[in-house]
Image (cartoon, rainbow over the protein chains, first blue to last red):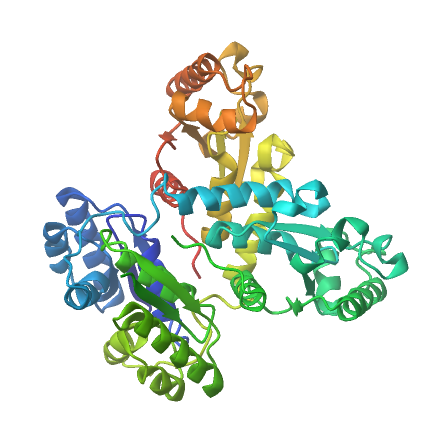
Length: 272
Length: 272
């Protein structure tokens, strides 16, 4: 019988989900039914949550695992009455932190994410707009404002990586697809040459690339294994000749690709 | 003197950052210098991290606050020698979870995020591509595949919200900008009418909207306060007449807008 895992919060629930999923991932032999209950910010909602959790516990024959980031003590007390095994994130860590920092925590709800008017938040939204405006080689005149310019063959993962760098870290990432014409002379296009210090290359296993392209355009030259091998060979040759740092995106998540790029380039994650 | 806050991981560092920032946000009177050290997966890297952390502690005159999601016990032992106040996320919670679940955790690195070949991960990437393909009213013929269709006036927050819904939750979100022509009859465009059950409206304070539009196109009719009041009035009237659920994006982060939309629509976060 699958256990239920609840993520419960008086805010968005994203912190509880992130931590909870990281912990549950260490039990990869087990399967869980995951339920997030965000914005539990009134006694009515808390009571409704308790009923729902208890129903789940009954159904699966075992207490639900509960990941809790509720701040309000009264609401927390209600949730405590449910049939759960509780991982109480704030209760566990806030008090020791208060002692160490010799400061009382503000115990205020919805602080986990930067407020919508903070510098960090506005940077992130700016960066998302920058990524959209500078996607796929568009508007190359804005490269001087880019923190990083990703290059690579079509479908090697540039766009999702740029968006993730923007959304998560506030990094302004442009991207430029290296086409066959660009590769005729096996050198960087002029528009990129002068920003060479910001360029980061993506590469990908040709077989994986052919599979991805086939989903978009089956039976085309574009998706053929021969073409994919050829293009990947050429860009890797270019990266090496021009001393462009690069990473293979095969089997890597966008989180990993993005954080590896930050690690290599030394770009700062803007978190405050 | 500002304290240093370190986020340290043998993976991407994102879980340590998310939890650490959520906790530090409760101490909003204090300021921290944040440093993330990802991919600490060798004794050399661990020793280098210890030196760096100790240097920071010396500089600020107090131990660094350390948020740790390292799995490997040997590497963790090295990190423990640094001058830190440690919040050890896995050590604190994994053992109690092992007991409750009567299962040993796999203690394997890099499990916090879905692997790049998991269904969840592929769903997220699919959803990001869907959001890009169905942005700004493009390709309305794909609305039958959308989980939700965001509507609203230009610059009310539709695109970043669609991208966040896709990236974080694997939700396929299209968006359609309600233009003046659409509003001539104060009814939904035909292309949207048949998908009305999937539509969610965004609105925004007209003064905030005028400020955002002014950044893009100063001194235009488009950015004028009068025009913004007029457009917002019309769409809110439309939402109410057509019984379209809607939310104001003013002062809300994309995390909050996105999770409020999920809460209202009952759409599932695809997390596994």
